[in-house]
Image (cartoon, rainbow, N blue to C red; front, side):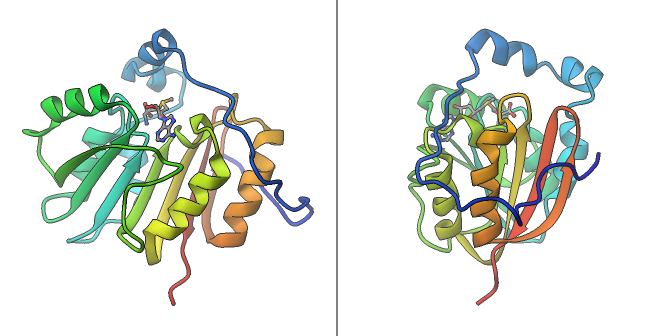
Length: 205
Ligand SMILES: C[S@@+](CC[C@H](N)C(=O)[O-])C[C@H]1O[C@@H](n2cnc3c(N)ncnc32)[C@H](O)[C@@H]1O
């Protein structure tokens, strides 16, 4: 992966209200959730990919837009017992089926929240880690979602974003990355043909 077009030094100030503009159709989501397909296309290997996320005993991690749980099982195992993983998605039925599938799998203690990433139903400074696996680009107001991430993350906490490049085009992501760079310290960038992966830290007080 290479660092391509994510510099924001010359980017104009972010415009308020960058739209979401994309919802993965259910049929397409089923197809792109196939681990074999994602592996063959070189997109994602959950057990490997989640290693970019820090882990310490007692960590509270929120996966915003967990959907069908493509990353959730691997994330639960990665964080390990003693930590807590909150899976959050607007769809109550997705949350119910995820719960049925994951409650007996090894790893972090789970909780499941039906909620909106643009208005997180979580307290200020609640989370040590926020993870967005190809979900920010589907939210109706990605800039509001980033401000919510900043509110909910504790000082020193980590924000990890996987973005799907064909959907989150350069024009759409520029103002988003500008706000991210304004609010957080960027720690890691990886950009490939399909994916962009960004790791940020919220400044410690
Ligand atoms: C492409 S799917 C990715 C799901 C999963 N993380 C994965 O990698 O397979 C996008 C997800 O974003 C979720 N989403 C859309 N709008 C959202 C919002 N406002 N707040 C939280 N999640 C949202 C969708 O419900 C869906 O589960």
